[in-house]
Image 1 (cartoon, rainbow, N blue to C red):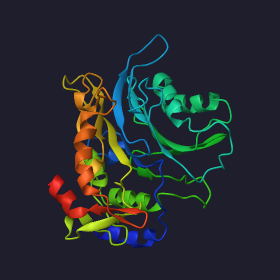
Image 2 (cartoon, rainbow, N blue to C red):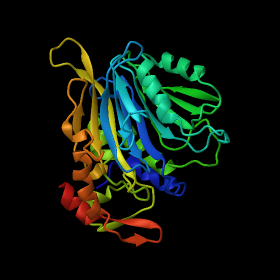
Image 3 (spheres, helix red, strand yellow):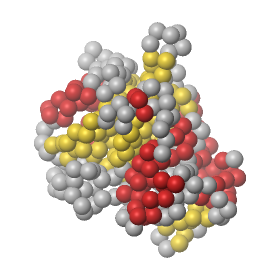
Image 4 (cartoon, one colour):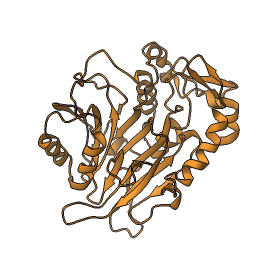
Length: 338
């Protein structure tokens, strides 16, 4: 079925699509008046070479805020956060960017450490700006950082080793970032097709809910050539060449949202969480008062949520390839997710 007529313009984007990159992601920030709930939404669909993630809560100390974050399974100390929220209502995530100032520094891959520091210290978007300003150069980052705060403010910081450019997100806006920066150069623009799919879907959705991202964009396979959701067609298989938002290397999809509290005395932040291959994953509600056992690490670091999703993923990706690309068994995906 077609998403809508406007998504047919994805045909032009298909020719710009890049190949699979191991440190990728698709993300969006949705302003309050574009959101169905009236709350700012922060979404990250994670693509990574690290196959397993878990959720952990970190207690406040005399100098740090309490926060909840997504970590790689081998990061048992929780040193690097890949998306998270703190008690002050500040939240942050990132996507890797490949077209910023060339990364020639010896200090590299510090994005997770920067986000941990932000969750520990920041209450507002301006605090995050001050944090970046305070870091020694080179910062060791090449990333689009998405941030929101309790006042409803939201922005992307397109950040390289020696600086950044801020793109504010208006209440009426929905902005997408994948694996290039709009302030960067024309070379190295990865994720153009994925950005196009997400942008056009959100543009065609006047009132955007968390389900539009974790329920649709992270689960469904929109074909850039036709605009069709191929999981709803008679197509039996497809090639995972990096154009779909869900890919073999997708390991999580998370939306952070402020929702009315049960007691009616304000709002609380919720992390709507899918771990494992998102089209096969369940959604878990994570709050400061309740983190489901399924998203916590087991004795081997792997969560029950991932085990369940990855059992299905092994049938969706059944080992067949076309050249270097894996084949997706669409009929099996439909069967497992109906």
